[in-house]
Length: 438
Image: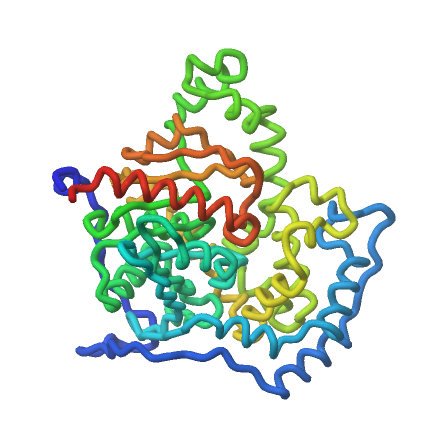
C-alpha cells in the first residue's frame, strides 16, 4: 500500500541476551512445550504457605493500605486446601505450547489454530500481555476469536514476554519493549507470518506499538485496550483548561469530560496512590523482588492487589478488594502460580527499570516521538488507569479506524471482559478488512 512507503520507521536492530558473544548461527527450531508440576514443588509450596507470618489488618482498613490481611488469610487458606494446581496445569495445557530460541532466549508462546468454517478467512493475530499478568489472561477470550461464525476467524499467537513465566529471562542489561517487539516480529517470521494483526494492553500495548513502528508493512492492523498519547504539552494544557466547560472547542466528548474530570483527583492523586510499585520496580526491582520470590503469600498479595485496584479504584473500599466480582480465585491463583513456579517475578519487575529507569530516557526514546501509521483500533475501558480522548490519540495514531467507549471494565480487559473485548476487536478488523483491496 502507498501509505506504507511513506511511513517513518524506527530501526529494527538486533540483540543477544545470553551470556557471552552471539554465535554465528542460531537454532531456529520450534519445540513443543508442556507445562509440568511435581509433588515436590507442591509440597514446598504448602510448607511455605503454612509458615506465612501474617500481620493483623487495621480496623476498617479494607484495601486502602494495600492487600487486606484478613482477606489474605482466606486466600492463603483456599490456596493451601482447595486450589488444585495439577488441575490448573491441565487447563494451561488445553492449548498447544511451544518454545523457540530467539536472540539467545527460549521464548514461550501458545499457538491456537482456529475452527475454520467454509468460506472463512483465517487472520493471524498476536496478543501480548503485560504486568502482572501472563498469557493466561487470554484463555477466556481465545474461544471467542478462534471459533467464530463471521467472515473471518483468528489464528492466535500469545507469547510470554522474555522474563515472564515460561519465557527465559535476559542475562544482560537493557532489555526493553523495543527488544521484545523485535523478538516478537522474529517469532512471527519464524511461524511464516508476514501480514498479521496485533493486540495488547499494559506492556503489551507498548510492545505492539513498537512492532507497528518497526515493521508497519507487516502489520495488518493494531488493536489496543490501553491508550498512551498526549497532544503535546501546550495543547494538553489548553484542552484541560477549556475542556470541562466547552468540550466541543477542544474535541472532547461528554464521555471524555466524565472520565477526565475532576482532573487532579483522577489523573494526579489517584496515580500517586497507585504508582508506588512503579517507582520501586523502575529503580531497585531486585531488592523488593527478593521477598516476593521467597514467599508465595507475599507474591500473591503483591500481584492480586493490582487485580483488585486496577479493575476499579472503588474496590479499595471493599474488605475483599472486589477480587471475586470479576475473577475466580482459581484463575487468579493460576496466574500467580505461573510467576511462582518459574521464579519470574524479579525479571518481570526489571522490565520497568529497563524501560523507565534513568539510563533509558524513556520520554526521549525514538518510539515516543515517532507516530504510528498502521490501521488502529482503540478500546477505552472506563476503569483504565488513565483515560485518553480520541482527539489526543490522533497525535500519535494517524489512522484510527475505531475508537470505542467501552461500557464497563478496567485494566485487564481480556481477563475481565472477554466478550466485550472480542466484540470490539472483531468490529475493528471488519472495518479494516472491508477497506483492503480484494
